[in-house]
Image 1 (cartoon, rainbow, N blue to C red):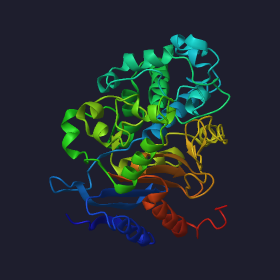
Image 2 (cartoon, helix red, strand yellow):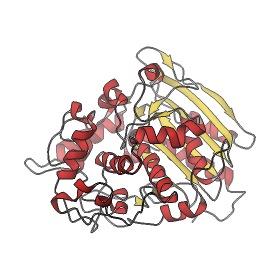
Image 3 (cartoon, rainbow, N blue to C red):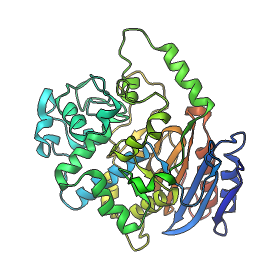
Length: 395
């Protein structure tokens, strides 16, 4: 399978093609796509490698892929849009919209606590099956009934998958629509963006097959080795939901049943161009659409979490706004004003209001941590390309 790069770059953005091509070095089974819009215009649209190395299927312009936790960024856009429209209040109790959530000492949990990973529900106290994940009521009822792992609002820990059902149920209670329906009506249909939360059966053949790269294989093995017997490993349980998913996630999210379900923490399937289009529309008019106004963005990126997590997780730690991942040592964007969300295995998507950029990088070869610098090098290259227009914007 060739890893040649197809697509185009606008004048001045040619270095992005070289940076993207470099991401494939030593990875013959990898497929990926990169899209960048600036001031609403497509300036980079590239793809290459294998969508499914087993079948010899190449990655094409219309190939879609699971975006993992980039999904959380899209749910945060929906929440911000509801705030903008006066239908949701970040400072209101979750129970004001979802009364059953007040159980087990959670009556004081605010919407912003949920969005910023401060709700104390980062992992389940019970094990779920994969079948459970396809039943919305099962997941949301269990979270409403669960006692928090720590006092909500006093600290944070990453809600790897539970975040999606928590935010998604708030959206459903406010709008009367499932989060997938609301995403389609509010975002993807107006922008004609190939993005789904709950993949239709007719779109299955476009989805890239996920596979696990060596750095993620090593990380999973190291964490299993270090796990203390009889001691709850909450980050592990938060990722696997007690056994519904393997810790590398690939097998679970290759499952058509999972792709067809609405998992608002990690389950969106999209093209890179669609994701870049959505993020572009949060900061500038894109294809005739502006999703969020400037005042809404300013409110949504107010720092909610900028401290060590309550669970034992090694740094660097992300910073969070109202569900948005902010620029930090854990995820550098183009400028300090950047906001977005990355995803397991190497996915990255964000907007930058300073430079007018909407960005998305997607790959089906899942790598991990500091061993994976593919998107980082691409973002660094893009920063150099746009820096002449915004000198001194990087701190």
